[in-house]
Length: 265
Image (tube, one colour):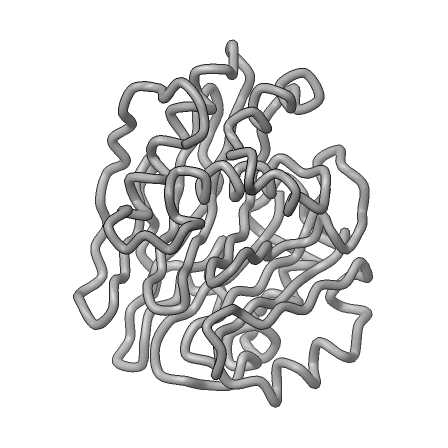
């Protein structure tokens, strides 16, 4: 399983969370403690928000521990909201297009998990992607397909009246309807540059680990504690979401999945 970190708060260099801590994301790429795969060497990526509405993106197929560019980028890039991800592939090729995070318009997404029997279910899941969004699909992962399916619930058009939390829950319900008993793990983060959402969900399987920490400077959500101290972090309950909207207090809310929609909007 992959490892990732999402941060929202006071602008700071990415190295404070990605490369410098004792159990940083780079350390986790070599020796993860709460993953079925202790080594996550199938590429890595950074996504961050700065002066533009759309996020910056850097993705590489080399392991995080072997790319000196990552150290320099994390030292000099400052952001109020950023994602970082190290990948352990689950059956799809190691290509830049398959590395996380994924970006579309102002939206940024990354995922730790998988849809079991992906080759059998791929066509059904990709059918949840709206026709106008499908041409933007660049890779072959289930993760990117899930992201585009979420955007197809009305987020891609920039409609402010569409609740991202509801869009994710509807997508999870749609995927659940086609699983036919296959396992599905979904530990993911989603952002529009202002708000941050994170999810810990599973169907027909155990849920991947996810932790939350709030400080005076901001909120960090991680696959496993970057300081190695679990007592300083709050475990996100299974089938719950972390919601950080604007300057409002962070909430942890249950995922309430509705009935399946017939097709992408």
